[in-house]
Image (cartoon, rainbow, N blue to C red; front, side, top):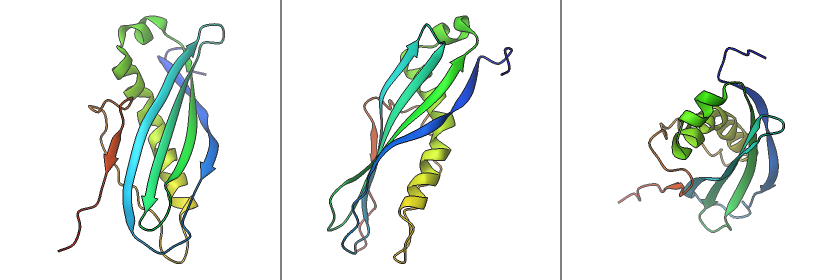
Length: 137
């Protein structure tokens, strides 16, 4: 691990997948929310729990639950961030893995869920964000 870096990304874990796509239908919504971010002072590990939800028309909502882990190397840096900055900083490293797994889990003959690259650095992810497609006229 690089002790000069403020933190090290240790990895992520998919904690649970609850996917529903029994009926045909396009994407109705995509939602992202950080459930919690907790620092274990004994191990210097910050854990970030994220729920990625999506729903296809004519189907029940689907959810992917993730945990990212980060070793904090510089406590001064960590404590200089407010909670929103801290969560967004760590989420940025986790989001590419969330996008990839969401696409892999939904890849079938009907096509997959394409999650766009989005700058969420100014979004309060504890409240969450939901995207809905514009209906065709």
